Amino acid sequence: MAGHSKFKNIMHRKGAQDKKRSNLFSKLSREITVAARSGMPDPDMNPRLRLAVNNAKAQSMPKDNIQRAIDKASGGDDENYEEVRYEGYGPGGVALIVEALTDNRNRTATNVRTAFSKNGGNMGTEGSVAHGFERLGLIEYPASAGDEEKVLEAAMEAGAQDIESGEDGHTIWTAADDLHQVASDLEKSLGEAENVKLAWKPNVTVEMEEGPAGTLLKLVDALDDDDDVQTVWGNYEIPDEVMNKLDA
Image 1: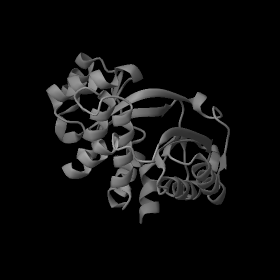
Image 2 (image 1 turned 135 degrees about the vertical axis):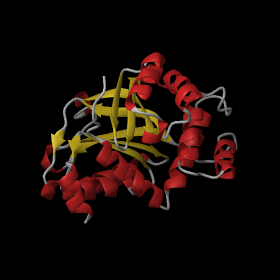
Image 3 (image 1 turned 60 degrees about the vertical axis):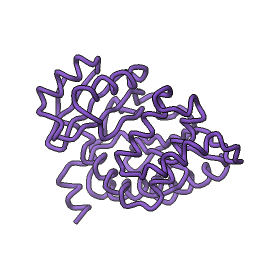
């Protein structure tokens, strides 16, 4: 049930970029607003909203910003965001899934297609790559939450499916329908998680060499920089030595 996370170098690289992006709070606010509109505007009564608020807090989003995003859900403004998913291929045949919240499908589709075409990729049709992924719940804890044995025991008791532990922290996978309950149970034993969300976990990963990896990361950055794009998932794995060269 345990093992080194193949995605840690990518996920943490993305996390570092997220913190530097000026539009991070805007994306978090959008998710909070959509979550509040999907159910009760009370995080205690709305599991999706509670996850959105917790993720915003994990990124040090001010309480006032969080409350404004919740209040916006019942404010009667003209913005009506819908969830859309795009799929495609990047350099080296890497499969990518792009999740977005948008108030203009045409704009977002055009921007995503442009990002693919300008960075060595091709946008595919819906379902073209999703069959190679599994929809699961993802919970991340820092290494300081405990050693592998402690986190493994807590995850098993909470009903998690799998755990990957490494020097950077712990990645816990759950069934999609169990995410909210497992996250709630883990919070009692391990404290608040760094990240809790629904994820696309690839069934098989593609190990990248330096050349294609550099182009791929430019594509991922281009997608991630779009205001409408919330998350980019891929089936790629970049070895630490390659990542170090690209970051140099």
